[in-house]
Length: 433
Image (cartoon, rainbow, N blue to C red):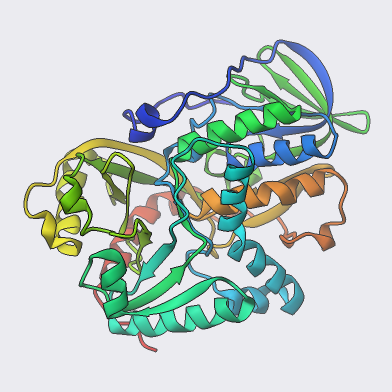
């Protein structure tokens, strides 16, 4: 298994997050009830919940805690999916299972912030709400429909008209939008490091720089080999998401990994920042080529975007995202400077839903958070722990689905860049409602 040790440039998170707990590579052999592959939100949440249930658990992380998407994302805590609403989930999974999944999603942000408070995780947590503004009148109609579905389910949401969105965000370009009061934002690297500390205190073991080289049956369980040793476990949880590799080839070919770029501005004067996202909401709007922003405690705006081509990405992003910031927040004027730029990968599925799979007897995974992996992955960790502890799959909040690969997945990865151009074209058109 080839491990990608390449790093993006230093992120804002890497210079502001508290250090993580001391960990080391696996040295020798050990036996546990549950082995977890991957030390991101889902893997560490799984380990925490397994350890709290009194079972032994070991996490095997290929690089370091926070190396992947968990430490490099934008930090928004969002209790919703990118595309699907509760009615879509009911149509796909049936009334009961669809509603259970929708409630898991609706409660995921509150679940995450509760974890942060319970375990005293230092990650600049701000549960100030998440707003999804509509960038056109037609999308405002869709936002109202979305609000009605989540409200019917019992989610703590509100519909905002254009004036209300402007008051909450300081942006006058929007026509309405959805507010989820339980959402917010965090330092994501601080969160994943804090989850690692909480899992260790609960009794889990965490081994970093310990890529899993093979997984083979042994007795009633599985033997996971690393460069320095092996773990024998009765159950295995795979929590690699966009960083899935050839250890489970079908899993890797079931998603399209897409690079997501993040940026942080220079520190802004307090009087200026008080007019941009004045109530400290997280914002990600209705564009398919997403506009997203939130402020940090050191008075920066964290934002970012996607590129169809990755060449000369820093200068191109500075220009594109600088123009975007000025269009949404004209008060910034012409002096927008970025002090930090970094990137990570996001796992996209063909239906934009997370997939819960049984990879083999005793091996389960959730993959494909589609850009909603902060809150949802933390909540999915509890479900994965329940599955590893022997709960009936038909009595879990995530419906089990067959593992299916994407035909010509290699080409799909290349064409995902072209798809971004189509998204931008669609963003310029009004939707039919």
